[in-house]
Length: 288
Image (cartoon, rainbow, N blue to C red):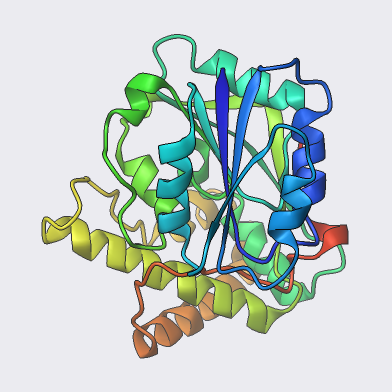
C-alpha cells in the first residue's frame, strides 16, 4: 500500500483537484491518503473529507513540519509520498514513483516544468537562469513531490521544526540513492509578479539558511548540501554567454532576496509560500 501525506494550509482552491487526480484510477486499498489540515480557516478539511477513503487530521496551529509529522504517524504503508496540496499527481504518476522505489533507490522525485505563462520579463529572465542550474537535476526539492521507500524513511525520525523540509529530505540521501522519474513532470506555477518572486526567494533563502545552521550546530542530524552561490555563472552563463542579459536580472533579484532574508531571519516552522501563484487556475500540475 502506497501512503500519501499531504500537509494542507488553506487549500480550498486546489485540494479537491489534487485528491480527485490521485484517486481517479486507484484500486480499492491501493493508496492510503492522509490530508493534514493545519491552521485552516477555510473549507480545506471538509473538501478533503468528502473524498471517500481519505483520512483527514486537523491541527489548530499552522505549520508544515508538524503537519508532516502528524501525517507520518497516521500513515500505514510504503513507499511514502509527500505531496504539496497544489500539485496534481495522477494515479499513474503515483504508481511510477512507487515503481522507482522498488529497488536500490531510497528516494524519488519527478521532472520540473515551470509555468511562466503571462509572467513579467524579470520573472521570466530569473527562471531562464534558474531552470538551468544543475542542482535541480540531482536534488529532490522544487517539485512538490518526494517519495521515500521504507528503508529511506528509516533514515530519520521526525521532521525538524524548520520550513525547508525538501532540503532536509534531500540531505538524507547520496546521489546514487536518489532518482528522478523521467516519465512524470511537475508543472510548477511561478510567482505572478517580481515582488512576489523576491518574497518567495527571501523566505526560501531564510529557511534554507536556518536548516544549514541547525545542521552545523548539531541540532539536525543531516549533512545539508552547501549553497552553490556561483553556479549560475560557472554552470549556466559561461557555457551559454547569450544568457548574460538574463543573468543580470537573476543576480539583481537574488541580491534583493538575500537582503530581505537578512532583515527577516525567521526559520520557524510555519508556511513559506507564494500565494500569488497558488490559485485554482494556475495550480502546479504533475503530468504523465
